Amino acid sequence: MHCSKYFALERLLACGLIAATTPVCAQNLLEEVVISSSRVPTPLREVGTSVTVMSEEEIIQRGFLTLPDLLRTQPSVAASNNGGPGKATSVRIRGEEGYRTLVFVDGIDISDTSSPQVSPRLEQLLTTGISRVEILRGPQGLNYGADAGGVINIRTATPSETLGGGVAIEQGRYGTQQLSGRIGGSYKAVDFLVSSADLSTGGFNARTTDSDLVDDDGYDNQTIHARAGWDVNEKLRVEAVVRQVEGENAFDGCFTSAFLPSNDCDDSFQQNIWRLAATAELGAFSHELAYGENTTERNFFAEGASFFKAEGALERLSYVGQWQQSDVLSLVFGVDREKEFINDGSFDRSRRQSGVYGEYQGRFKEQFTVTAGLRHDDNDDFGDYLSYRLSAAWITDLADGEIKLKGTYGTGFRAPSLYEISYNNGPFAAPPASDTELTEEISKGYDLGIVWASESGVYLEATWFDQEIDDLITFDVIAFSGYLQDAGVSDSSGIELIADIPLPLGFTLSGNYTWNETTSAEGEQRAFRPEQLANLGLSYTDPQSKLRVGINLRSSADAVDTLGNALDDYLLLDMNASLSVYRGLTVYARLENTLDENYTEIPTYNTAGQAAYAGVRYEF
Image 1: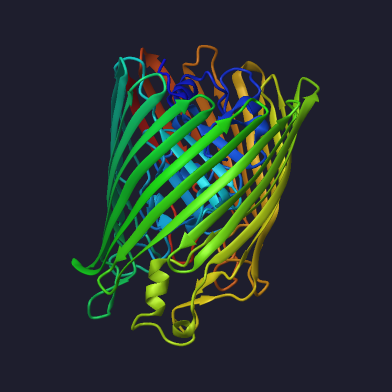
Image 2: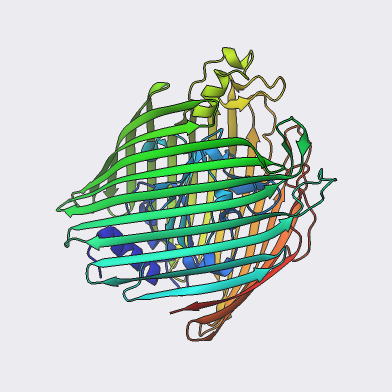
């Protein structure tokens, strides 16, 4: 076993030696260790924030090819898609826009700074190679700074003790084919892993308004991800990560250079990422120092001619430290410094932001944990901002398990993007937007919850949340003058219910329900935010763990569009199965939208019908 605490933690998670969200055997899920809450490993029993975790076993069994489809199965997560794989996709946590959510892959912030709003391009993120997803809900300005209305922390597969890997091929409806593979291992103090995936789909007609071409709008994605580590000694580890994503997408609804509408549209996406990190254990102190860079290029074409191109870059230097005197007291502290850049041909702009933070963590009689933290950020455009977070968790024995009461109050902010600022100062802006000096959005929110987890693996949770945003930045959809700032408060509140219940004979029942009421500054329901989201799943694993079968119902109800018109309520049934037929050889199949539900998430955009997929996977 490698000696670095963080790498050892990953190895334990990968090997199932620390509890997983969907357990193979009975275990108390409060023993789950998460990193996203305070950026250091912390058992769920001590965490007052709201975190859900998806294990590698669950990710593989569900089988979805893209991350947004996987995230839809989790509490308080809603997504809307513009017509199929590779098309613009918004993922909203607790009713907040996707650009208020940070996404990290192996510690790398994958935000695209070339977008109008700095946000992760989740439609470009495949599930292949992902071993763990943590979803941290609510304002998280304390540990993450700007744009952290929620955090999705993704870890890729961990290198095995010896040389190993796997290959997989999958085919299905809409001319879909994916080839993927990985290889990795460890030798003495060095370990590595390289994975790749090639997805191609013919897609379907993205928009109902495409009445001239009426063609399928396909998508291709090639992703390569590599990581390598060196345990210099028992106290010091160095790790490097490199990632490249290339996407080619066809869509409907663009304009030619002569400003004529067209449905012959394409776009290309390329993101190159690297990160170098060092972790050290020095007595009661642990340290992680990391530097990384994320560059993005996007190009849009109408009838073969480029009509828009944008480049972005994000450089990030971060330090996270922890001092742990004992199991009773620890301090977490850190520094983040980043520089972002955008160039779309009409303007070229960059800025820096620095943040420093500290968090106190106190534990009393192994039952009560309290945290309190403060962060100071300094942004080139709007100056200083203070964020803070308070949390508490109290746990005690009840029946054959434990009950936990938890609560959090946190704040955060979103800086106006470089695009928003430049647009309002550019030639296309007009009053009132051109007369508006954009400032940061301010968010704050709290949640209160109760959890019961038994030794037999039963997990029940209920959480109430309420969060609001002041000075919301929106585009002027009436006069198209540019970006405006709401004077009022936008609110999102609701309840989350989560259950995982092992049943006899290898069955497990799981589900979640979210009621989410969202209101704009004008008191209207906010667009594309369902008031009700639900998932209900039943899975079966045979005693030898060779056969796995799962069914999942997903429903969405009571959403409206930008004009306040009601959108479709829908209920989707997905089914999956896998069978281990020989050593390392597994065949699997998946049937999405089994009942062929016809529904609309965004007006004029089509959604996928019933689709079957099958594949074979070999691991060695």
